[in-house]
Image (tube, rainbow, N blue to C red; front, side):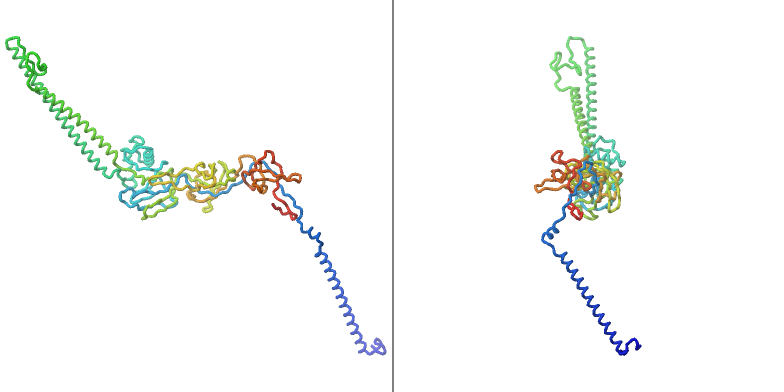
Length: 544
């Protein structure tokens, strides 16, 4: 070891110098790292300063938006198609509020509901009683003419014909009566119909039986008077015949006497029927009326009595006929509900058993179910009769197909759209408020391809008019191409060769995000023209 340390250095001394050298190297390295870090920091600060500090011109240039790029679309001439989706209401061709007046036709009876055999959704058949008020029924019968009066024996008219036809359809014919007349056969049909339903018909007049009996008694008296008059005439004729026979016998006796006596030239006065007029030659007139004349007068008087008794009896018999014609079973208006078709449906029940009738008790609809919806003016141009319609009830999930039956020409005009009034005033029925009839829109009526499920009656449904289209090819642009100017004009802007040109138009039907346009100036807009629909910024985002 001594040869490595040198002759003058001890091992301990050699180890101390080595430690001191290592520490110096570490100090120099640490200083170098600090210098390098400071240099990096200064370089980074310079770069940051160069990016943050801009001249005023550069700052203004950077704040300007990029140059816009115009978005255009071509004008097309085609049939504008779309599917129009609207809400609709399912209703029948006829809807009637049942509101019986009075106490069920019974004088003094309180109008209280005594039976209510139907509920909402029930079907009603012809001849069925849908309600009972104060013990009196309300029958549903087939007919289009609303009831407006009580139908009584002797009545005539179309409503009588309708009643008779409705009863005949139920098996209660009245062919024996004259047409449109409530006669004896009709009375019998009414009696049988009511009896089959467990009711007695009301009499046309409260004392009809008494009137009939009195009239019949008068006829009996007239018949007796006529018989007595005929007997008196018969007796008077017998007396006349006896008087004539006596006069002939007397004349024969006188003739015989004259034949037996000598002829003196004197003339014997004739008797009997051969008597001359008073004051005649050959004898004096009789002082009083002869028996033959008296008998003749009695016969004439008796004949007059017979004639008068016959006339009186004829009048009495006619009165009996009139009384009988005016009496018998009647059908009160409050007991009739004429409906256009069956089965009918109960749409609403407002009354209850024991409740007093103060308005409508039931709402009944009849006829085929149809759907009515309301179109906006833009949709109206796309919808035409015979187009296919899908009917969907979201409540029940029921789907059905149909066709557009009619579209109203004027807003809120349900009659032009083919709806029929339901029912009519008077009696026990009144027309119910129209369902599905729009107040401001254009009413559309949908006719189902097949009868709708009765459960849909009164429901709100979704109507999808499939492949709705304009009437023919029209000029079409995107909706975004149409704008309004400050002065209220509707325009599209044509972009051609970098130039913009406004064209005033009238918009038409709308469908599928496009709209029909009709230029006010002919030829100012044609298929293929590019119209501005928006602008595109530097990011590629379109903006109007």
